[in-house]
Length: 121
Image (cartoon, rainbow, N blue to C red; front, side):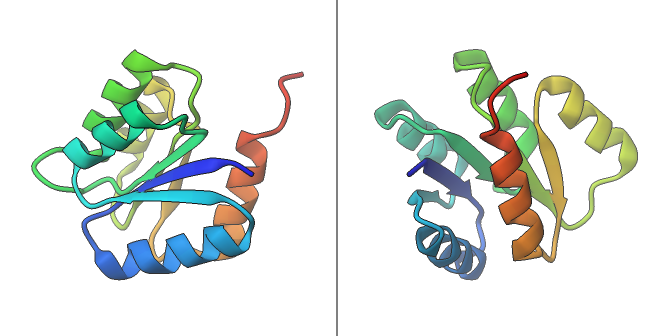
């Protein structure tokens, strides 16, 4: 079982993803704001972070950068409804593993999560 942190300001998305991931056997922590996400990350052993790109006054890029400064091994899958290729490139260069377009297809999310936990070759 992996501990997954989901960060989104949309409560509906948080609820759907939380239930989906719990049914997959994961332990889920949710946050609606970047500050809450950082607090959760600091208090828990988080195995994966799934932030929205637009959260509050900060972005998923800002949150990902801060998290990766703390632990550059934690996998991150950023969700976005409208990220351009330049921004996607910046996210991937930063160390984000995947960018998942909204509306989220749960099968795609499940595949990305599995890929994040494959052993290094």
